[in-house]
Structure formats: C-alpha cells, structure tokens
Image (cartoon, rainbow, N blue to C red; front, side):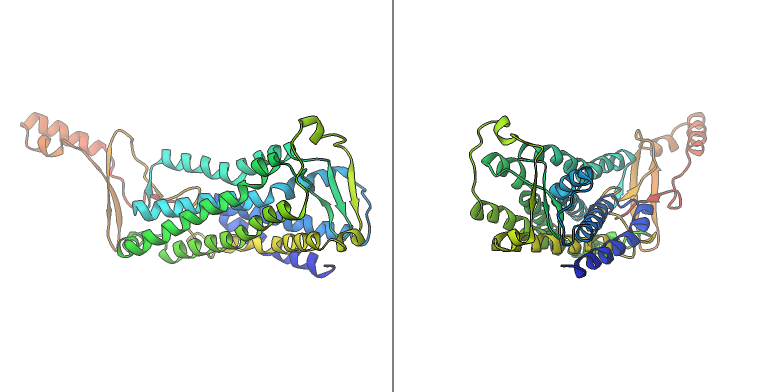
Length: 360
C-alpha cells in the first residue's frame, strides 16, 4: 500500500477541501458533513500509513484513541447525511415547491446538523458499549478500531449503517418515481428560480444514490464477514466485555497476511476511504450551486399572521402579501375605504428582489 495509498488519500482529501469553502458559502450542510468526514478519514489514513510503515511503534496513544473513535463512526458519518439529502430531494419532488418559511428553514438546519454530526457522535458512545479493548495497532496501517463480537455489538453497532443505507435507497427510489410521474411540473418548478437548477437537482440525486450503492455493499459485507469469519461470543456482562480494557493489541504484517479474510477486509475498507469524496464534488459549488439539505428552498420573509401566495412565471417569481378582506374594504363606505387604503400603503409589498433564495 505504500507509497501509493497515502498519495491516493492526500489527493482525495485535497479534491474535497477545494469544494468545501464554496459549499460553506451556500450553506450546504449535509454535503459539507460528508466532505469533512471524508477529509478527516483520508488525512488520518494517509498519516497513519506513513508513520506506521514497517513498524509497530506507539509513540502517542492519544492519537490512537482519536483514530479508532473516528474510524469506528466514519461509515455512519457518510451514510447518515445521505439519508437527509435523499429525504429532502424526495420532499421537493413530492411537494413540487421550492419555497420555505424561516421557521421551516431553521428546523431543516437542525435536522441537517443532527444527521450530519449528531448521529455519528452518538455512535461513538454506542461503539464503546461493544469495544473490547482500547484499540489495535497494525503494521503498515496504524491504529484501528476494535469491537468485541457479541449479539449486542451486532444489534447496537453493526446493523445501523446498512439500515441507514437502505433508508436512503428507499427515498432515492421514491424520488425517482415521483420525478418520472411529475416530470413537467418539476421542470417548471425550477424555471423562475435564480439559484435552483433542475440539472443540479438530478445530479445531486444521482451522486447521492451512487454513494449509497457503493457504501451499502461495503458495510453489509463487513457485517456478514464479521458474522461468518469470526467467533461471536455471548454477552455476559459489561465487566466481561470491558475486562482489561486499556490493553493495546499489536499485529504484525506477518500475522495479518496469514488471515485471508482480514487482508481482504482491511484492503477494501482502506481503499474505499478515498471514494467517499464523490458527493462533495457535486455541482460547481459557486453561488448558483443550490443546497438541498440544510436550507431547502427559497426563504419567504413575511409575517406569519399574513397569507402568502407564490406566483411563478418564466421571468419572475413574485411573492405578494394578500389581505383577505381587501375586496370588501374597497367596496365599503368612503371613510372606511380611505382608512383601508392608507393601511394598505403602510404594508410594504414583498418583491422578488427581497425574496432570498436558499437552495440545494
């Protein structure tokens, strides 16, 4: 793997880093989350394969703790934001509208951060329940996470990554079906938008689905391989699982090469790390690249006590504040009519220029 693998990881990380600032400006929360998890994994893998090339030293145990925790939840950090992306794509296709209120925008941000960072951080705690000892140090690879294989480990830790991929895949299929059924309406939905673009929508849908199709077989294979190639021990107690927890297991290259299943598992897992930069490269990433994950839609700056009607045409998207009793007031007596007209003048009209478009 040396020196080709660290070079591969560094290039992948640089490609993802280039796109992060542009996505940050447009508020692409879920795509940024996938990019950061990918960048961190590639940098750690590249550094570890360089530092531990041909040796089993452990100069900084704290770094080993950081690496094992990060690699233990990195798969979740990639699959969880993808679920949010696919769900948001499906909701746009189902509702066939790009407009949201400020309250909806804040709520979507909270969910985007939860799926992008909250769930993976939660899995650090979940993995600790099934973690038999501190971590492993593998020659040429460096620190690696370890899991004590029990039924509890499969139920709490291994099952969730495939499940998240399946959920994302279901939303991807539903989005595709909905887009096929309402192709013209969805195309017209993007006509009046300055930031939203149908090609970007379908490209993000495609790339997210590709990530799921790549990620799901890998995580599913890990579950099957752990269940078939290794012994599954019964769960006895917390003390039994975490007995002598602070020990560090050192594995030479000779020990790894004589276990074919382990060689295949680590090779596929490490080389697949570089492919996780696929989705962060979606779109040009400039101000016209829309975000479909955290700030879905176009913000309507209006009073919540008022009704809003959205008019969409090929040249202009106008949001207009309507007064339900406007027609009645215009036909009322002179004094009432004058007062109503003055009140109407005090209400500023919300124009297309004042409407903020927040996109994919």
